[in-house]
Image (cartoon, rainbow, N blue to C red; front, side, top):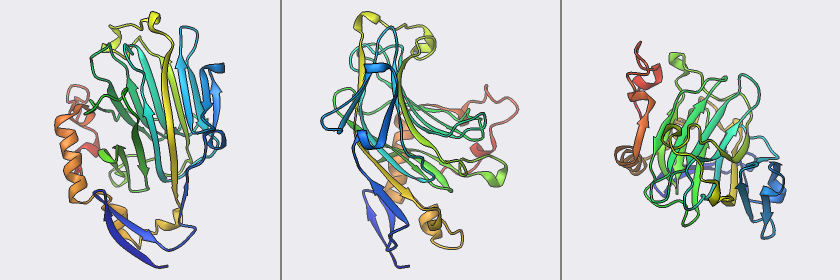
Length: 283
């Protein structure tokens, strides 16, 4: 095995000259996804290069990947519901199935016109979540497409927006915190009505006179990391130092100026003490 390293867009990257280690695919939505619910509210067009989900008073809609993934990087460009999106949730996530499922979540909580979307993130392992962080975005996510990415490795999960890291969830199994690393997951997305909680805790309801609400997707890419590339006795720097100094600065910038909720700071929620992973180093 030969390897080399370089810095790209603020990230430390290790390239391995082994064809089976990293497999990237950027196909069409016809090839990579199934429309799973919502009848004709979910549509694929432009020759398989564009997908849309719509929500009306009768139903929302959704899709899922044909393949399962165990570790990798998932990129998708989304343009969210424009205008008054209060009460709507656009969910884009990785998940396995069953009562002890694992899950890695992006959820976009709509709002009334002029107010910002809230980006809600969470990580589930063995059926248990409660690891929420929420952010405002530094742009209007309804005007143009933006890239939302998940890097999932046995050592950590990184959430990125336009290749800027917004959250790192590190493996803390050493202090008894379950981490998603054994269950392959599919990619799911849905657009649905959640006006009982999504906007200001359910105070603002969906305005159905603005329906249908539509979100758009393009430029899906999956880069699978073979588990063979995660030998605990090799490539330690690549495994642990996903973010270089520039990446860590961008992460601190997002968390300082755009994070609006962090479960690790919610002392009222955890009167018996913060979760074990919250007491560890962030980076």
